[in-house]
Image (cartoon, rainbow, N blue to C red; front, side, top):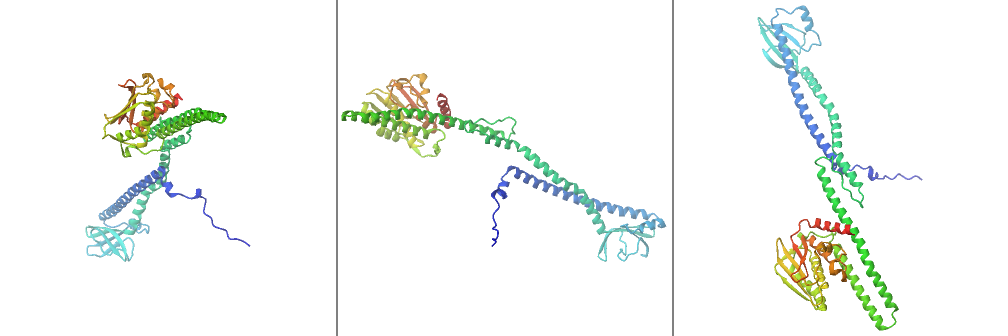
Length: 477
């Protein structure tokens, strides 16, 4: 038993994708130039054809007139001339009439010849055949020279066609030249695409700009800027992962040791003490993980909506919320005092959760590094060009030569180096501030300690500034 063959579709690669072919710049340019070339050739060919037709017709008319005028001065047509005029291959017909209308001569007898003369130019139709004639009067006779219009038009059309034929033959050559020129002109784009495809994700080298056309150079410059930003972000992420792994290793090791101590402790009092130490270690590890996640969400490259498109955040309400939820318990445990001075009407567009993390880290740092019974002052005032938040304390502060370095991840300067912490607070503050177009600066407080100022609207190109901060952190790592 035989089975009929089953028809199958051709493989996808064998199909002609018309939409894709016309999405090519080369195909579009070639099609557009070929259409323009064809239109120009048709226009030039049409005009040339028409002009040659008119010129050929005028030449034939000139020949008719000259022949008639040349016979006008002859008394009689010589036998040799008469024999030449009777040649069947001669298109012209010569007729002579007397003044009384009697025909005295014709080059050849034919019933379709014009039977009467009209002085000057005329077109007559005899038995369905049109004739173009010129007649002139001379002494006692009328001489007329005529030619079939069909022959005139055929000869004129042949001459016109031969005049435009080179243009048609040159069109394919012009198309091939256009294809070569377009391919050569688009060569830099193909070279740039190849160079981008050869880029190593681990080392994004800039593309060469020299020798590129003016239309391609801005694209390559923009690509290099993008590659530079991607390289900085990639380096920052590598440094972040390495630092996070290093910092998490110590608390996890401590938790493991505390769990082992808890297992080996025989009495209830010792077990309770070990359990408290284990809970404190879990709290520290949880805070470190929370800060790492907050910093990761604020780092460049993290998916987030544009802050300018977010709804405005009432800063005074947000500051009171952070103080009530986070600062109040720690301040009460230390016997410290936290004060708030805020302009109630100040708002900024942004991410409320991220801004809350910024405030929480500022207040938490101030309370942790301020001695028990200390004082922390929060201010929210209208500044230029936007609202300004300041957090002041009466702690030990940070030396001026260390103030820029403490914004790096896992770095704690001055007296803070001896205090428990992760060194991520100010890094989170700067990252969140840069996302919201704000600048962060450290100075001396009127209370005797450190003053941290966050100026909104004071930073242009916040993402670029964050990238530079990331780059410094990557270098230091």
